[in-house]
Amino acid sequence: MNDPTPPAAQAPATPGFRRVLTFWDLVLYGIVLIMPIAPVPLFGVVQKLSIGHAVTTILLAMVAMMLTALSYGRMAAVYPSAGSAYTYVGRALHPHLGFLAGWAMLLDYVLVPLICTIYGALTVQRLVPWIPYPVLCAVFAGAMTLINVKGIRATVNANLVLMVVMTTVILAFIALAVRLLFAREGWAGLLSTQPFYDTRTFQWKALGAGTAVAALTYGGFDGITTLSEDVKNPRRAIPVATVFVCLFTGIFGGLQIYLAQRVWPDFTTFANLETAFMDVSRVVGGSLLFGAMAAILIVANLGCGLSAQAGISRLLFGMGRDKMLPAGFFAHLDERRSTPLYNILLVGGIAMAGALILDYERAAELINFGAFLAFMGVNASVIRHFYFSAGRPGRRLLPDLVLPAAGLAFCFLIWLQLSVHAKIVGSIWFAAGLVWDAIQTRGFRTTPAAIDFSDV
Image 1 (spheres, rainbow, N blue to C red):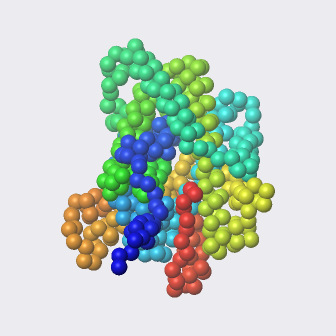
Image 2: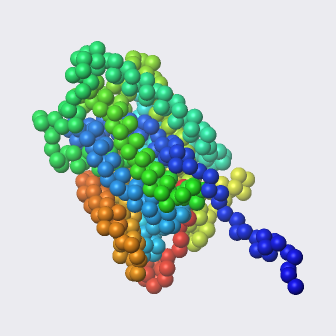
Image 3: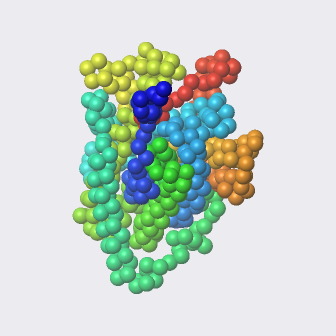
């Protein structure tokens, strides 16, 4: 006798994400994450490090990021997870290597509120120079901490509005810079090879040092991979979207830096290297553009710092809850607001103290120390999974070995150019992670606990 119950009633479908996002949705999301003014805070510092070749460093970093973005996209299609590099390295290479990749990423996330505090305070100081820098650091870090303690977080819609405002200001800068350069020197002022290669100052070592910091321009591109369960045809859309976002960022950001170099080629005369782009904006568009650029930089850094502090605080809470960190402190929740109060205060304190100890350049290099270790791990994961996995059919030399190997080599060369200070501090952090992993896994005899990056 036939069962009258419909098949759907017998076996309900397993709930899951709806694949509704298109390729262009991913691209927009990635541009929002990176922000269209990403290279602006780096301009003066990278100009100094590269001895006047900032736009070249942006383009060189773009090559490394595009190769790495392709690797991220391919691994996201295989392991759709918010863990990103942590998950890919842990699954494709080894769980303990995955833990160390996650530990390196943890350093990045902790430092984002710090670098936002530094740049936000420096930008405000250009508007009100009579207020001491330590006071501005305290105000900036305190504001982020207070807002997060109250449980308020930036929304996607707010970030989208911010992106539109930033794009409007930077497009105004581009138009006014083009008009100024053409009025000064005609086509010769607009079209020049000097920003890319100046025989008087070019040095490979300086170019490498600048590129090691300029790579921060592309920070956040890997966030696209966290949407792999929501997008149509993720195996194709995710890799192409991540590469496209890096390409767009490099070209659009490179144009901003190119024009800034043409307007103000002598980097030794900036009032402040960290806020040098604001000086260029004043030359291009007067006090109005100077103020507009300052306003969007302040708001952008506050929004970025808020989101980063909220995310890392929740990540630390998860690690405390899973007994990976002391639960009494890290797993504490404020009963009134259900926020990880101790973690928020800790991250805010690190941002405040770090802003007084580190300058923008050192903080950027420390972020890139962990980031490039993770990037190298992801490129190695592609090689291991797609080219060397036992019994895997259809291996392809170019996409499965050559391109990720080139990405790994490029990232390693950039990582080598980081300062000795960044390598020492980063190595201490990395060694601490290795020791902690050994303690947690009884001398590497058990599998390390999973780190949940879903809230970051």
